[in-house]
Length: 255
Image 1: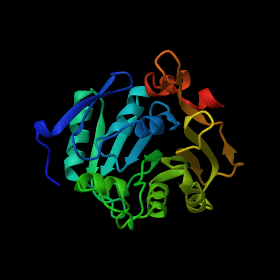
Image 2: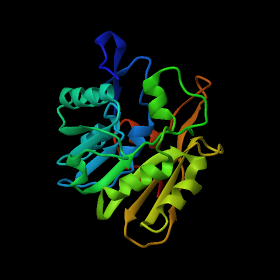
Image 3: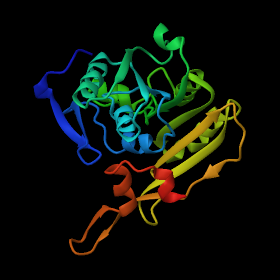
């Protein structure tokens, strides 16, 4: 994919406008999932973090805005999106090294390194599903060559002992995620994300530590919306606003 012209882009605010992210007007567009992913990633200053399939860099940059002093890296298979990630890092004054390449055949610069945390937002739709008309969106949202288990295996290979693998996915893929983590990782934690009180979770946040053994932990769900009786609509609840706008640690709000 070639680069994007400015007329093909929008500049959108994340974390209550602390980040400004350039992304395609009609291609793959980040919403709240990368913000939630960053809020579920344990990281402290001085650590190395890799965003596997970083797209325009939203998750990595949200993490960098939340936790200073990280060495951030991203891997992206679509050159146009990789260029956007570099542009977004520069525009927001954050250091992010973006590597071009496929997670199944990472560049040498990554194969020689291990990380303290690897975060990922893998494609949500199986290869057999109907593809999006836009190639960039289709590549980001539909499995093509690399299945969910391949993403998890690739992330685990890039981790040092005790490193965190963190991902966001559809809630109905939790069994497949747990199966892929069984053996190489432990201390697994899962946090459901529900659109409103009483509704089934649509998303699941999962994190696990390479080579560690600890009981599985299921966090209380994060409920995104609450009723707004005055306007007869819904709005983000206080906990969701703290995560999505203030960059709060999601586990501190639901545990």
